[in-house]
Length: 533
Image (cartoon, rainbow, N blue to C red; front, side, top):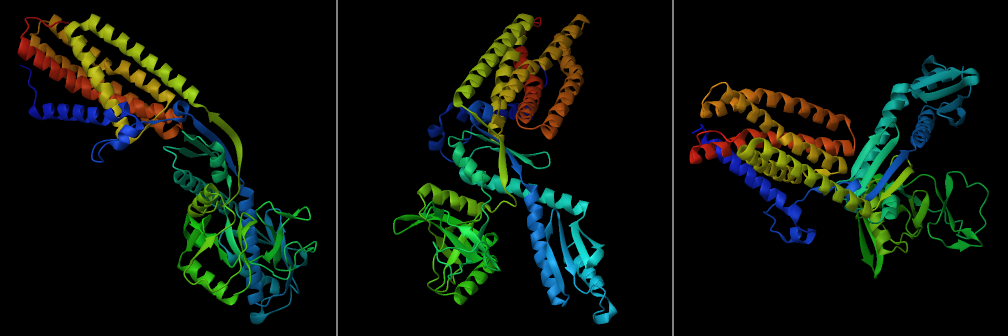
């Protein structure tokens, strides 16, 4: 009998049993899987966009607005620092991608003997890291970010945008979405199984920057407003569709926000007096600022502004000290749920536009699955027939191992929650051909050993031992290619790489251990005079 260690037998049965157990949920409906006990495997493979249908979005992040906002904050910091040091200035503002300020009495000596322009230049350099200060005629100072700082801030904004989009998509409940960077300013989003793409676009595309501002109650809604807002104020339209005199309702609010939405830690849709509303809660810092602002402004209205539009403008009846509140604005239940998702996920650092949108219908997915199933069946039948005709009984053993290989492959993909795409099906078909390749090498080697005059048992041992290096080398090189495809590929290419890599590992297992064990049982039980090769 061919020597076969007991631990190898245990490993074979354990792996095959686990494969069957984890692959079984793929044969069940979603309701049947949900009804299974939690301690049993109940996860099936996820179908990709090309099989299940869904939405494909290519988003572009407006990174220019990131610098506009950065420069606006930089101007505010410059203004504060110059006032603190009592350095007179004028014409402070933003032009293109730089900030500038003109120092009055630039050559006048100040404290310590330094001139106003020298003091201002020193202050500006210390305002923020990564900025350059250039002096021009007339006491003008130009401030810009250096190239490294620009790249870092752009990269940070894109990474932050991807993370916030991911949070919003996860809140929406999409299974196995693909969210990845493309180029310097684009994000690819693929959402399998989405049946309401318009709602997803609204969720993903909104900047969702929330701020809380005091309202200037000298100007009531509907009043004739000046062409330009008063100093320190700005105009903000109400988000509902009500109009006064043919114009949207507009409020005059303080430009400076009393609290910003980045201090929110939670928001949930709820009901108040039977109406859908959104509850929110601040962190400690936000709660302290909100409490202080409401204590100082009891009886005054304040505006809750989302992306430049007022969604609610209640009056502060009493100080809000608990760090939480309610947003009401004539929401539908779906609107309240979506707003809560946006606030929980956080605001995007920059607006995004949809450059490309494709919707893949379920009929295409069904056709793809049917074509893949046909390809798998044809490939399987051809491989089974060839192996039986070429290697007789040993071919039957190889075919049994092939079936087990597919079972273990599906079980492994279910455990990993890998996404099956159309190229992934191609990877499975390719794996079926490669799964018997190792057996072909072994069987041909056994034939050569028999022709050279070796005994039956000695030929089997030598066939497995001497073919092992060739099997290992061929599978290892293909595995390296699969790893590289996964590392540097994207979307469906990764799906192909995953199925190929798992298939290689399972085929090695079934070829080297499973078929050898079946051959050892056959030889020990039947004791044939010659091998059926």
